[in-house]
Image (cartoon, rainbow, N blue to C red; front, top):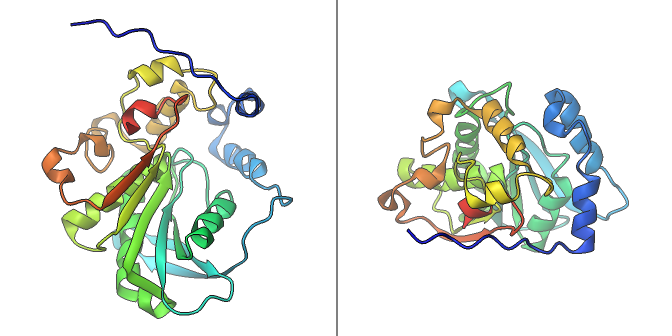
Length: 268
């Protein structure tokens, strides 16, 4: 076997380098109790000086059967009327952190920018809830959209799913579940630097293990909060494990990865 050349160290723009340094406090977010970590992340995202698109919103409680009740936020551009296409957004932040508050501005910008309505399931977070709770809750909210979306001004024939990091993982799983179980005929999936596999020894994991915000140890910790080791080869936990046959027939897909990121290789 031919040895691979050593990886090239990516150049970080000054602003990106400054962000990496500013968001790398000690103890790190995964080194404190989850509730404290959630407060830290909320504080980082609470800058009200950055304008947010105006939206009309409503909340619904979706019955997910044995998986509980899922609080779900539905938004649309302020004053809009008529059925709108849907951005189904599944948030990231390690399965442990994040919620409708930390992702509010991003959710608004994506939805309003697309001229669409938005659906945001507030799934139960780890470690209080373990896999597969989160993916089952997301699927249940998707079924609610299919059955009741028209009552809320949602065009159920035009739905795209998207999410970042572990939200990208669960978005890919959402697409698979809807194809295999029946459900939404998704028009697209947009996976933003997605987690797709529990393999911590890829070249990008080793190259960017430290110093680039998301660390290798951090991702190990996130997986430990979310799932048991024996579950991580299941396709609904690690969608990269899916066979080509299972991947056939999925919607048009856009995958965006970061160069200086432990998750780069599994996304590519």
